[in-house]
Image 1 (cartoon, rainbow, N blue to C red):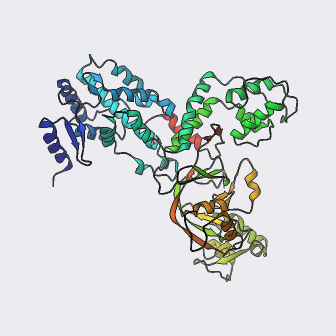
Image 2: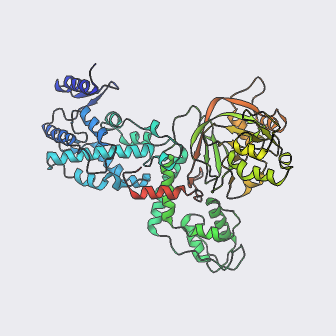
Image 3: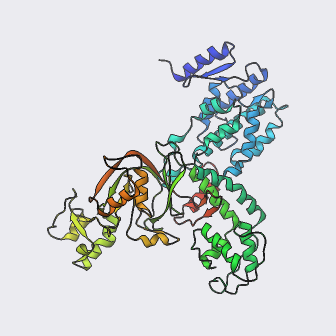
Length: 562
């Protein structure tokens, strides 16, 4: 058997040394046009590139951790011919890439990560540059292109570093092959770059808002909106109407025309619009929370958008079915139809900020359980159930709890029940019914976090503006609608699964009835505090778990990113 390196060398001799103007990628069977075949100057550049590779210096003028071997493989595959230079000038593809790198701020990225300005300067002086300088430019642009494509594709930070259950490895490109086949000779570089980014409409919309907020931040925040001595309600006397109107107009929550002498009418409506965009109660009152959001620097909003763009890039992009998305800081669930249109949207309740945060991860909804038992998790057993048993002998009956063994069989405990629960001999579950903590239905995507979607008897919580009240699982506002949506393409010998049928199964059907989905539906548990809606409005939400703070700290340090 030939080694891969020897095989590549033999192929290059056959296709390059024999006078051909094309090179072959063995793993794909594709040919790459060799722009340097008849250029003597390219031979000198190639010699420099080969020498740089021998010394491990390809692209070393930028942080190149993780890329040196890939750059070397790319240049080996083209016999070290320059990729971005022809006739002592940057190729059209090189010129376009450099401009894209310079404009990468509007992609939520940092142009200095790619040495964009330095590459632009070098590209303008290639005509009289030495072979060494041209080789340095070529290698640097290759590195910058690799990093840029990777950052657009999977983001800069590995989500696993932040303990998020998202694996980006399956999304990674073979960068040497991708650049050689798709970029170096692309007729339209922009169309190639477009296919790299996430296909989600939510991603496209929030990315499109970045320029607006970068421009706003560049103009400054304006005067602070003053606080009153107490919460200012509509109709109250308030001396800060001018500053308030100016801020609302700056942010697009108030028309540009009109003047206000009191806190009433259109000014109150502007505040309500602002509150709706920031996850606040839309009561028109200037309370501490509303004033804090009004006076948040625009640079913070820009960073929220940057963080959202980064996290969207972590998401998987290929599914058998459109995914169900749950955005934790927004307390919102969205489901999409087969043609990727928004089909269902509802409020959710998520895990408490401390100590029972809902984890960020991706999985597949596999089955639904109507009228489920609730198997009490160990943490709740320790914190709530055991103290309840110790306090009252009637606690179990009152809560409709029953004791089971490790196989789930209901038992009458022998001896000390509390000791048995603590040792793991016994377990507690709650009987199905309207007062069950899970409500009347749960949507299962088995995972190591023991997190799932379910209904709840505590429906009053959905009306609150901030909804982190659960022990980690996600409570859904419209469970019958979600069940009908997930089961819309399947029957079980009866009528199709309508909302009415799902509701009947919840209210009066068989206890603990499991219905398997014929096709698994992906569920993405997201964490983005900046969301651009379909109507163009931009919403910002509180960093309830502190994930933005941690991500921003990592991005601020610059490359190499973890």
